[in-house]
Length: 127
Image (cartoon, rainbow, N blue to C red; front, side):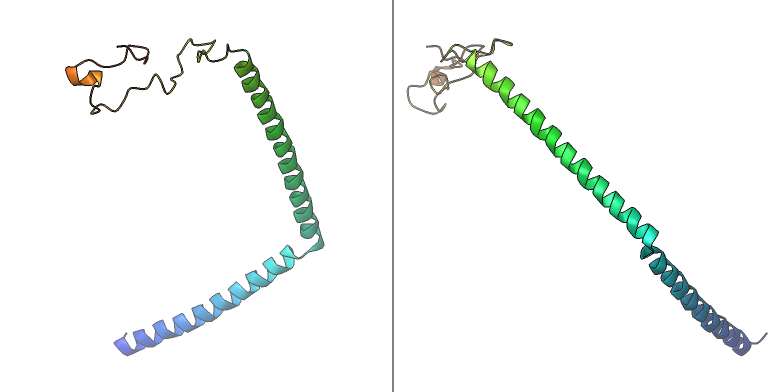
C-alpha cells in the first residue's frame, strides 16, 4: 500500500470514528438526561434529600445533647474543687498560677543566674 493510500485510509477512519463517537456521545447524553428527569428518579432524589436532611437534624441534636452533658460534667468538676487550690481531684496535678511562673531567665536577680533551676519538680517556684 502506498503512503498516500495509507494516509487517506487513516483520515477516513478518523472522520468516520469521530462522527460515530459524537453520535454515540449525544445518544448517551440524551438518555442520561431523560433518566435524570424521569418521575421515578426525581422521586428517589427527593426521598434521598429528605432522608439526608433528617439524618443531619438528628446528628445535630445528638451533638448538642452530648456537648451539653460535657459542659455539665466540666462545671460539676470545677465546682467541687476547693477554690484557689488549683489541684485536680483526679490527677493531683498542680495548675500553675501567675505567681508560680518563673520570671524571665535573663531578668536581674533571677535564681537562674547562679545555676539554680528556679522551680521544683512540680513546677512551683522555690527560693
